[in-house]
Length: 157
Image (cartoon, rainbow, N blue to C red):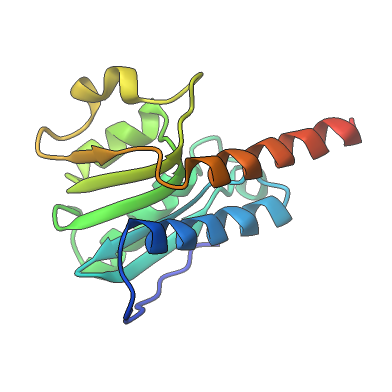
């Protein structure tokens, strides 16, 4: 499910917003989705939040980033997010990074690095040239949740 909300926040900063993305990742975990969560922030307000829905929607493109881009664009009434920051618990894949490039996202902040499918080795070709990138924010927490999810999933197999 895609959630659109507007939250006035007294506390701002990368750690605060990453905690919100991690809450979405936890929701995905509880729904047996790969635990990736995301929020889009504009003017220090969360305007959209989402998590992975690939299992529920049976759609390989239903990544948290794709869901939150759609929700944020809908909230803003336009397709460009050039005044927004995306906070996502896992480094975006190339598909999501390309979508973020088309959306002209101003800034991307992610938690855990994805050494296998992350975009950072190709970032110059995928993101808009003006997009700032900051990785590793609460990366250990993001990685721990993902590891717990897959460890528990392997136990069930």
